[in-house]
Image 1 (tube, one colour):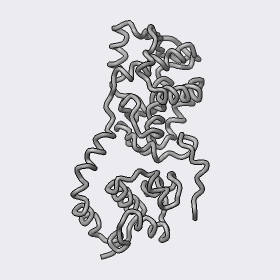
Image 2 (cartoon, rainbow, N blue to C red):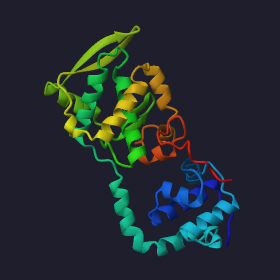
Image 3 (cartoon, one colour):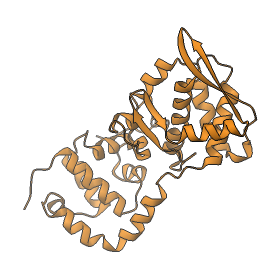
Image 4 (cartoon, one colour):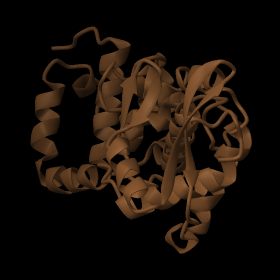
Length: 267
């Protein structure tokens, strides 16, 4: 029995089929000759799919249009996908962020080394520099940088367990906490008391952090908070909940750091 599917349902079914096939968004987008941001919007349910695109998707993902549009589709796919279910679960586990405390401390020290002298870099700016370093790295390389988990709070994304890590670093004489004022407002700043161990950072990791620092470290707390509030991972998350790294793949300009400029979508 065929049913009228919403854009969101179509997107969910395409996402499920793509993952069962073990394809990345980039692989599938290239195969059906649309841009990766367009596929991301389809999977999110924000963009409709025309019949020609659906036919191309059916050829690449191996489904019949009748099955795809049927009410029983999910059950059928569960049965067909049983063999691949184990490998799928392993893939999902791999993408779950695991905090690398030593790496996180060195990233924090490195950012502070480069930015501690800037009067605008208090806690608010620091949190956002960490957030964009982590999520930009994940978007580009599909691997975690520090593995820190971020929660959606009113002032923007905040790394979890940060207070505990900072207290450890203060106790070990790696950081100093300073209470000050900036433009008449109270500000908490952190000063590095030792250098980051750069052998802990890959060249690709340092490059991403450097780009974030160059782009945003001179912004005011209000400016960088407002910018983070327009980023898809923050927008698509619920208040107080953990922000899913996978949402970085649904970014559009100016947040996406992948170069989509050369991809021309075939209509």
